[in-house]
Length: 216
Length: 191
Image 1: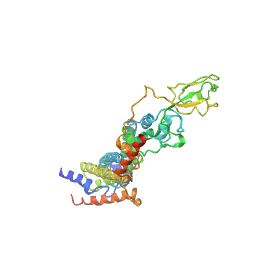
Image 2: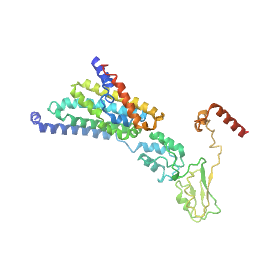
Image 3: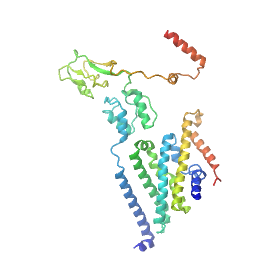
């Protein structure tokens, strides 16, 4: 058998290549089962960086769909609630340049806000309840609605549908529960924001002095 | 023992696959803009090159030579390399999703890295034994990793350097690679 194969060059070539392919196919098949990846782990990591407001300002129905879209190559600057901090964190994770926030999807605000319904003016239309992505609005048809402050993520989505404009976005007052020390600013960070190209040391002292005068 | 050391030094420095033999230039230019990515790529290529050198030696000695099929060398080695790369891809996808994402298209492109096929073909041309073949592949991979890491480190500094406008980006990268190649020519005659 071996002699016949070895003597006939054509069959030898066929047997060798087919045999090699079958062996390698078996190895790869085994590896595919052994190293099977469940889901996409990168989506989990991106999702955990997003603010979970489920506001949909990015154009996707929630944070997880947006995380999946990023994993498939969407731009990472569509999340106004997360702001520049989130963009930087995702850029760091994905090892890309951090873009600035895309204004088209809304502006970043430093102050956390919650929705507040002026209850005298509410006509009980339930439109804001349907718009709320996190079910933070209580109420029924023709009955006054109200917002559960601890559930509200401040996404602004309920403001638009209200026919009588009775919803305000109010800044959350800092209480004892969420008050934090400010991060100390290092001298390097103070200089970083300034245009120091043409400044020499004496100018620096002079500008400090004027700052001091203004403060006084 | 001494001949093994000679093979290693020869492949890493004197006959460096990238800078002296000009094989495997596409990942050298493509994945060298960030040091971290370059190190990941270097690791993956080291794994593939060593494994491919070993398995192509085995295929050559145990299948091709007994059946007088040396003329099928190139196609069989390409098959071997493709399988090793695919295996590495699965392994990295499982063990480090981040590296998998960062390497992106360059990971499957190791298949077409000419250094890998070059090592396998040179092994048969030089009639290396199994240990010599393995060392030859490993040394080539170390040499590739060395220059890729050095080049990536330099390009990271070039990215923030004050370069005249016509030389910005890939142009200065090419010039740097040329200068590195010149420098590596200086190793000839070492062994």
